[in-house]
Length: 525
Figure: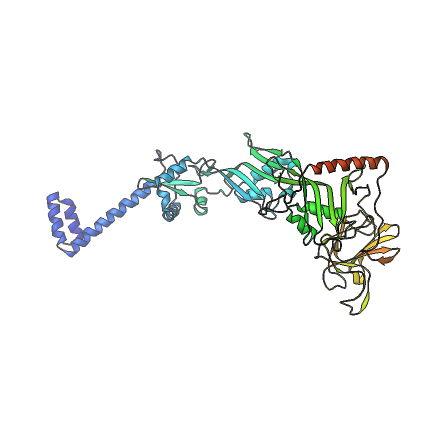
């Protein structure tokens, strides 16, 4: 009897006969193989039937999570996904997915060159939502305020797939299948999402709101309205000015000593400019000299430093001699100036140093020229500064020449009147809008230092010319600014006394910031 006949005899016989036939079949090799083959076929058929049931639409789903009809290809992909993420088969994962409303919040950090709309699209927000949100800002939106590193908080609703294959809001991006009667929650990956939503390539994240602070004193919140549009709420924080009186002793340079004392960088630079008409910071400042500054800084209601106000008073003690300057505005229609205790303006006709932080690399007089190889008179002062350092006009005047001039390289000459002019050589480039005949004000940046012409390295060549002849910028006596008289002087003396009284009531801050914090930022006391 062959194996098929054994099986037919087994299935057609009553149970006692079947048992006897089974025992008889087990005594032969062919019989044993037939029984094993039949058993394996039955088990495989049962598994396939169970899986096929799970792919059918459910009229009474076992769980509340959405079910969708699956194609055979998607079914295989989901099985592959679920096998690689076994923890998703746990019932508590399915329950958690059911309770997730699908609203998520994340913080996006801008990279260099990012736009606000582009940053939203990068996280899945549709182009229409991103553009509508930016448009809601109107005139309050300034693209220049977007800087690398700025954080934007975004709240959005994440869509999932409904039973018809469309996207719906406020649901997790996942689906549920039943395998052997047990629900398996499977996230829709990029591969299987295209199958679940045929013909859909638009982002499925729906912007609800975003919040960012373009400046420390401004907060912007954009919210989706019930009508589907967006509204913007711009909150400007009320800043409060705090007065600081700080100072220190110079051990290497004024700038470093002031920074170590915790004075903000912008205050230090402003103080250097105040004294630039009377102090040569390369020759006049020595170790052991001291300084003091009284200034305002604005803070947010939370105590965060926001912006620098102005210096009301500054004093430098150089070689035992005090130079004190007070802030005063004689006329509301004129610019603010600084005057000494007698009412004489700190401004001279020309600044001694037309660049900040400069080191003198070559002085005025005879020297051996390092390039030409012979001794000749050096008719100016060289300041060693990196290429691109801003160059300021030493005084108000008119640009007489701007262009190339042999060994000077890129060259500028400014006429100041009364027979005085200044010259600047080896420049890398000129500021936008500058040309021959242009008017410049004292301290205005008109060019940038460089290494053009005959040079051995980047520096600024600076000359002061009197009646077309060069004079030593470090020793020439320049006419000082005006001196207050009459009612103006009386008004100034009143302002000076008020500032002195305010400072007398304040202790001198040895340090405004902690060592662990940025020394460039003051902290509200």
